[in-house]
Amino acid sequence: MSRSYTHLVAQAPALPRGFELPLEPRLPRIGSVDAVALEERAGSLAKRSIKREAKVFALDLAIRMMDLTTLEGQDTPGKVAALASKAIRPDPSDANVPSVAAICVYPNLVPVAVQRVEGMGVKVASVATAFPSGQSPLEAKLDEVRWVVEHGADEVDMVIDRGAFLSGRYAKVYDEIVRVKEACGDTHLKVILEVAELGTYDNVRRASLLAIAAGADFIKTSTGKLPGAATLPVTLCMLEAIRDVHEETGRMVGMKPAGGIRQAKQAVQYLVQLHETLGVDWLTPDLYRLGASSLLNDVLMQLRKEKTGAYQSPDYFTLD
Amino acid sequence: MPDRLPVKKTYKLFIGGAFPRSESGRTYEAEGQNVARASRKDVRDAVRAARAAFPKWAGMTAYNRGQVLYRLAEMIEARAAEFAEYCSGRDEVERTIDRVVWYAGWTDKLAQVLGSSNPVAGPYFNFTVPEPTGVVATLAPDEPALLGIVTRIVPALTGGNAVVAVASEAHPLAGIELAEALATSDVPGGVANILTGYRGELAPWLAAHMDVNAIDVGAANGDAPDLERAAAANVKRVVHGHADTQSPWEVAAFLELKTVWHPVGQ
Image (cartoon, rainbow over all chains, first blue to last red; front, side, top):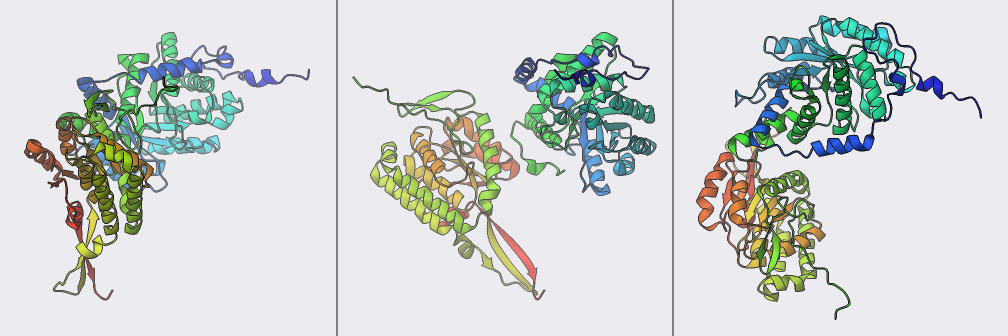
């Protein structure tokens, strides 16, 4: 038998000091998330029937938890201004519909976003660290983070270096998150795992714990730039990591599924799953966000349907 | 003793080119058969399918739409014997086929007959062109069973609309058989959807639906005023269609006339 090399990759490198959670012994052997049971559980939670008052509550909460997002090459200041108006007052004909939690934009558009939502209770989140690939030198990433923080972003959505993660260089991933967190200061940090590129639930759980240990305020599923972004099972996997950390240390970490959530019905399913996994303490925009661009109109349509009793048409809602 | 068990047909809905049962799981008895009894959520799904199918159907060339409708006539002809069992007989089936062919010929003549070039006081060309209204809801008449539903659906299709039809409550089997012909013709899935069930239960949801652009209440009997009031919410085009009629104005009833001004000499 030739010399095995698996111990080299299966073993996480020594983690830097200041590791907040007692995860060192666990990280290398975090494996074996029961994929079948996870998908089964996520599937059964998605079948809950949510009726009138509960549905209206869930839809209202979904809006308050939403990160209204535009991350396109064709984004302009005008588009962000329109998005900001919609974020502040999603349904111009109904003042009872709350504002969304935040708008999420590219770094260049942070100044215009900040100017537009100032004083309106809507936060500005910016993606950073060479979104969406994360394949840039650390210094460039840190400069980007400092820049958006300087220009008034309330929240930073960073991506992890999947290249490093998948080749087993967990310490590099960890170190980057720590450095980005330092650069953020008090600004909230969301760490995007980009689960579609991680391959397995084991990796998702490993990356979740790694990000939490490194200081993430939120962990987030996806950039939204790949097909197969947020799914219910992968979100459940991350919620369970958050739950385990909470049970062990008492620390409360936020969760943000993003990408592919387009229908109000899906949003309600995510909230049911959240409530069943982490309980009512997490039913707040401070600890849960839905990253979405086209979801808002569908939620607005459902709310108006509940109010008027008639099925709605997108013709009567603003274009994004 | 028969050596095999015949496969009996389950009478289902026709939504988006597929044949689902009602999401509610309900059925009711009509013409000696158990027929799916659609719910408001089936209405919702059918309208969604129609809305999704509409742009492609409306965007086809008129000539191509005519070809597709002609093929629908072929498919009814091929099943003429079955259709005859669900209506008053062979004669009604033949009149139905002829009517579909007649409308098929109209698709690429509508713009010439209904459109116009208008004389205006100024240096402009001024055109009026007919365009489809969008998603049309139709309540099929009870009699004649086959010719009635075809008479109401096909003119709307001819103009490029997508249709959600509620088959006759008393005689739904002709409508379900028509769905078989639609499914095997080249009419794209979702362009014509057929629901069976209680008209009084389904019609109000269609009338109030904000994504339905026109409703044909000709077969609504006493419910028509209530349906018209509900239809006013999004200013639906309301049509009182007849069960047995054939005219280009039947098509025009589901068309919008768009007028375009264009500067001369540019």
